[in-house]
Amino acid sequence: MRITAFFIGVGTAAMVAVPIAAVAAPDGTTTRTDLPYTLTIKGANGTAQTDAQIPEGTTPISLSATVTSTYTTAGTINVSINGRSAATVDSRTGGAIEIPLEPTDVTDSGIPLGLSTRLESDKNCFAEDNAVASLVNTSVTYELATPKDIATIGDFLSPGIPQYTVVVSPQASNAAQAAALNAVAALSHSYGPPTKVALVSTDSPGGVGLPQPAGSDHRDANDWRRTF
Image 1 (tube, one colour):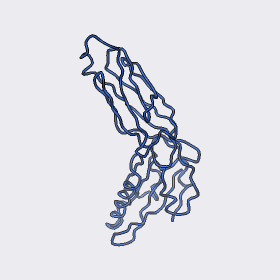
Image 2 (cartoon, helix red, strand yellow):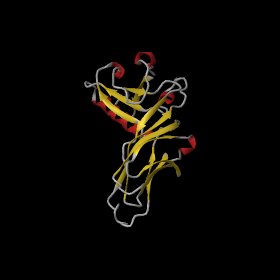
Image 3 (spheres, rainbow, N blue to C red):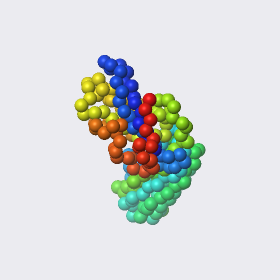
Image 4 (cartoon, rainbow, N blue to C red):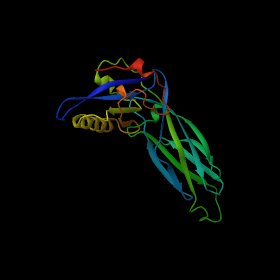
């Protein structure tokens, strides 16, 4: 669904209403977020770790990615989730992976994601020193928390929203422009990756007609707009 509320800028010369459009999936659906980086290992004993982020209050469903490789020695490239071995591919070919996720895979810092290789013994122990393997096109599919009835600004600004769009008119006053920038900063600080916060300059009322983020389901904006 797409909902429009009004963010009241505080600390500006005047109290200014700035539209914020929040995009969420309808009740009971899932959405997907792409990881903004590539995980890479190098050499016969290469390992790498990171944390895949999903919005607070959501439930992970699956992780999909592709392993690319320049290794020539037989063996496996291993993908781990929260310390457990979750997928393996041939070290010489790589391949696509799809890993089911569980709520217990989520830690305070995200979903721990690891990449490592295990090669068969080779008489030339330096043969793979410059070989690399990467985890690319990685995305996490997750289920949004069941939304409750929106009655307050606190309900509207809730975890699990993939994207917020702050809309300001090109003809807005300096105070309104400052309020919009403050809203972007506040939302970015409160929610962080992978939630996206965008600032758009348009005269379209409430930002209706703005592009929707990939991987989310939406309903018509006019059916879901609310103003506080």
